[in-house]
Image (cartoon, rainbow, N blue to C red; front, top):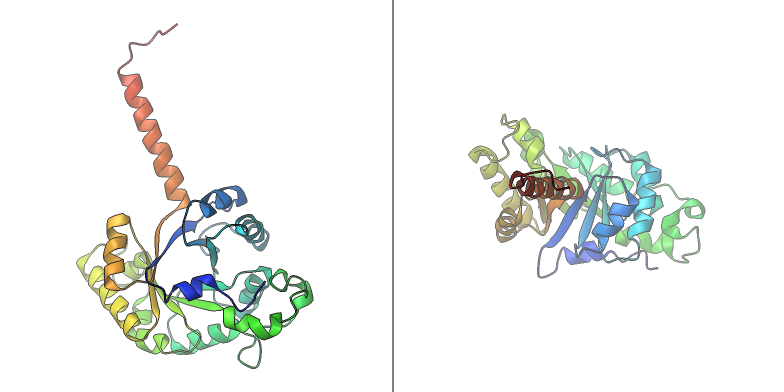
Length: 265
């Protein structure tokens, strides 16, 4: 294991955008299915999905043999919680509701060992350090950390350029739903004013040399965001795949029944 290597972080500078899938089912079984489906990254949601540290650990273990990089969204950007997510093995974290450069700086420090940061040191208890069997973990771990700051409020947009200038912020993810609500268009992320704000934000992020990311509503939307310069794009969720697939199957089965006269036996 090389603690300083992060394939997602390296891929942000690659020739194509990294395509991901949101994970909200909190199941190691479905996570493993999604991990072998061909996505570059999977986002394990600790903010809106009913995840706990044990459930996140089980999902990390399930996807470990596969190429999809595990990203976690913490419920809140607190140093003590970030420390726990890192110790169980996440290298890439997304933090919601980042609204100032001071907050972004504190988050970057929370993800790194001293002297660059304030992450607590306990490799003997950390899965990330293979329980202190990775000889260079303390020296190499900082290089593998990847921080994705989530901008999803009017205040975050106003501070975007300053946040993007913070060392240790590797990418900025735009949250369309919350941003729309903050701008006065709750439930309408496709409103022209919201779309214009998002497009402008993507261009500003890219101008600072940071990776812009977003959750797209489908393949056509993802193509558009890639053309705008997004470097990491989620194209759906495990919940959506299951719900839409089940609903489609039910509709098709219903159509078969509609054409039946019944009494087949």
